[in-house]
Image (cartoon, rainbow, N blue to C red; front, side, top):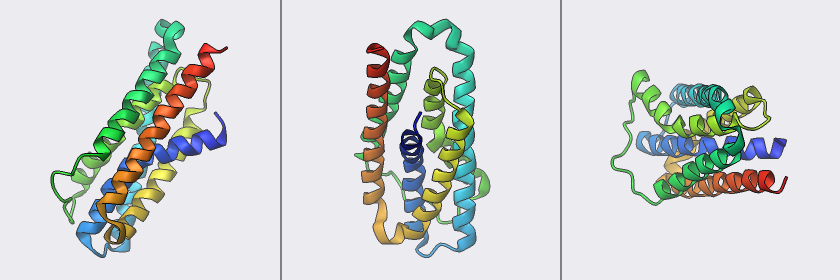
Length: 185
């Protein structure tokens, strides 16, 4: 996987955390630096761990599905991408709490990182260094969620939904690219 592709994947996986952080930043109004860093660290660490878990599950299953691995990668990435596109069109049900406890913050981070786990499964079928990719996803998520907290009051929830839609398009495109590459080989 090229550095550009890794960067696009990392940014795509970080967008849902960014959207949540924008909402939190908007709800808090003026988030404290400590809260901004805590949010970024929790989201970044969890988002870095989940693709490794998915990758390990995919590696365990890879010997059984090698003949169709590119179709599985395409289906998983496409499904996550389409889901992100759909989610970007939905209004959030409630404003995020300005004072999230650490367990609630972690639960939120896990909820936004399930797509990274699914992508991790699809990466098991490719010749990639999962640890480099997971680190890139973690760093991107830390930066985007911390930044989302800081600018949340300025840009609001709408921009977060636009970014999520773009990330969905990138994931669908990555899935199509993998499929085309394997079918033309």
